[in-house]
Structure formats: C-alpha cells, structure tokens
Image 1 (cartoon, rainbow, N blue to C red):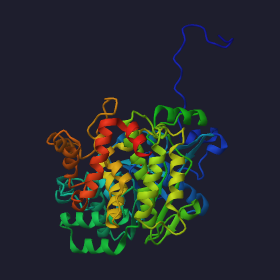
Image 2: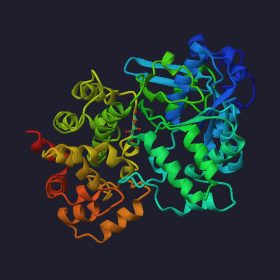
Image 3: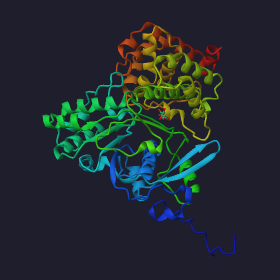
Image 4: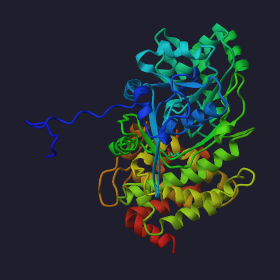
Length: 506
Ligand code: CS2
C-alpha cells in the first residue's frame, strides 16, 4: 500500500478515459490526427466500416486532405453491424491504427471520418446521403460476398433479396439495393456526377461493380431517364488495394490503449506496408490521394492481377495448408517444413507465367516481398480468417491462374494444390482430426455436394468441381486439372500436409 491509498475496502478501478475530441490534447504528439477532426466537410460515403477500411482508405484520405485540402471527410456506413458504429460514435468518430512490425508498434489516431451510420437501422437515410450533391465519391469495402455476384461468372445472382430491395417499396437492405436506390435518387435530384469505387479484392472490381449496378437496374424497373443518367454521370474506377489488417482482438485494443493513454474501442492494427492503385476516373473530383502515396493510373488491371494472384492466392494457399496442419496464424504456417519452397514454386511456375505484370514489376520479386510480409510475427493473422469465404475468393485468386496456364498448355501443379487444400479444408477436419470452421456463404451447397459424394478423393473432387457458382465449366471439365487436384487431395488425405509437402518439394 502506498501512503496515499484510501482507507477501507478497495474500489473497482475506474474505467479508463475514452478516445474522443476531448482527449486529443492528451495524446502523445506523434499519435495525433493530421487534420482537425470534425472540421473537414463530408465528400465521401464509404460502405463497410471494417478494420481494412479504417487502416487503408481512411489513412490515405486523411493524409491527402492534410497535404492538399479539400472537402473530403468520409461518412462511414456499416451495412449490417451496429457495433463499430456505436463504438465510433462514442469516440467522436476517432480511432487509431497501429502499425505492427518486428521492431515494435506505432499508433496514430485518424481524423478522416466525418460521421458514421448504420444502414440497417435507417436505410432511407443512406439513400438520401447517396443523393447529396456534397458527396462525390462512394467507396466500398463490403467483402466479396456482399456484391451478390456469382463468383464464377461475375453476374448478379438471381437473388430474391436484391429483387425485393428494388421492386418493393420497403427500404433496401442489400448493398446492390442501397447503391441502386441511392443512384436513382441522385439522378432524380440531379445531384451531380459521382464515382463508385470498389476497394474489394474482386477481379476487375470496377467493371464488376458497374455490371452489378446495370444488372440491378434491370430489376428496378427504373425510369429510363434514371438509368440513362447513371450511365452518363457515374464512373466505376478499378482499384488494387493492399494492406494486411487482421480482425481486431482484445490485444489490439490493449496495445492502442498503452500507446494513447486512453481507451480506443475501435482500434485496428496492421502491417506497416500499404498500397493503393486507382484508375483516375472521378467526374466529381477526388482527394489528392497521390499526395498520400497512392498510384493513379489508366488501368489498374495488371496491378490487380499481380496482387490477387501473387498475394491473395498465396495467402489462401498458406491459410488452407496451415489450418489443415494445425497452425493458428499465417506466420506460424510458414514454419511448416517446405511450405515456403512450395509457395515459391507456386509463384514462379504457375502465377508468374499466367499474366503480364505491370511495367517494371517482377512477379517473382513481388512474391518474395509478399512472403516476407506474411512472416511478420507481430500480425497474428489467423489462418481460419483468411480461409473463410473460399467460394468467393478461389476464382480470382487461384482458378484464373489455372485457366490461363491451361490455355497455354501448361500443367499448373502448384495452383491445383491450393484447390485440393481448399477441398480438404471444407470437409471440416484438420490433419490431427480437429474441427475446422466452414464460414462461407455457399456452405449449404458445399455441404450438400459433399454429402452426396463417394468418400474417395476422386469422388470429393468431382462433387466439388460440380459447384457451378465457383468452378466455370472449362475448368471443371478439364481432365488435366481434375487429375492434378485428385493427386494432391489423395496425398493430403493419406499423408497429411506436412508429409505431402515433404515428398512433393523434394
Ligand atoms: C486476405 C486479405 O483475408 C483474406 O482473404 O487474403 O484480406 C489480405 O490480407 C488483403 O487483401 C491484403 O491486402
């Protein structure tokens, strides 16, 4: 006991002060926002308030406004989850981002958010916001599945929910429903041009978002003038987005609190690296993101293919093989003997020859830097987090590599391993028998396919290749691809990941 301890029974510790405008002056100088929070008028609506947005576009936008000005505050909209909105609202829309590396952590509060909304609580307010002339850019990080597209073809799923959003009078609940209702309201108000910017890891994400809006409009029985207005006044720039940002944990919040001296219940943490390549089509203007390090270009396609195939594809490979081998995190998975060698073969033999990288880039060198980033021990990215929603991720991450290599007559053996690992993962058991979660919007279809399949590697492969929403016919019907996947799945089933890789990488 110290001399100043109050007498009597000990009191519960007071809750720490919370991050908010009132706490700014108390923050260590390097942790303070680059702009005066609450003073930048809104110009952007962002859909999807997850950790990735807060550690990526919010960071770029704050810096761009600090460097070059502009009314580019972000109104962050959570489509479904009210938690983050409540936490941010209690903190005057402030949150911190911690950069984690082997050398330690750096935490900074970001002042980019001009407001937060929960779409499910008041969808009509979001529709009105999208029709507000002050808003000239709409960005999205809603994850692959929220686009309601068929992953194999990129076409809108004939989905009752989107149709109901657009044909009934009730407020829209799906992302396509919100966007289309918002754009039609904008057209009716003549509120000026706008850019819709997908920042999700979809292939040709700009084109897919445009297709989504056009196909949804067909449901909407929209007045022809509205559809015409949208064609003329809305752009869909493609992007490549990159930063490894795992879901926040209690540890993330504790690190932020130690650095800030106040609690931050909306804290996120990620790797120090970040990259953003954006097609420069912004009819209503945009923040000076290039001043924050983003690359503005005519065509993000080659960057996007590089990233989806050589980073995300390799991430998925590490996640499925790692989870099967009982590894908790991506960095731990890389300690599986031979796995780094196998991933290098995947990058050099299958991914690199499958497309032409952007000017000046080498896919193999890029792949090396990716493996270094994955090995960052401070990130703690869980293998099962990266493994989720595989049906939505496999096409652009792995299947396009296989299709392009098969078109060139090659046998993409390592890419086939990733598909086999996914097929074993979705059967729900790790090599040691532990249960693995199947967190995927197509889980019912995957389970049904497996339930009807003979219990052999060829039986499982055929059943899963029959999922037309994931595997396009030219892949599912290709005998070479099927053989490669069956060989790998047989080896994984008989020997487990560690022995299968040891034999294969010899
Ligand atoms: C990961 C990505 O969870 C996943 O599927 O592959 O979120 C990855 O961390 C980011 O795309 C990196 O930019």
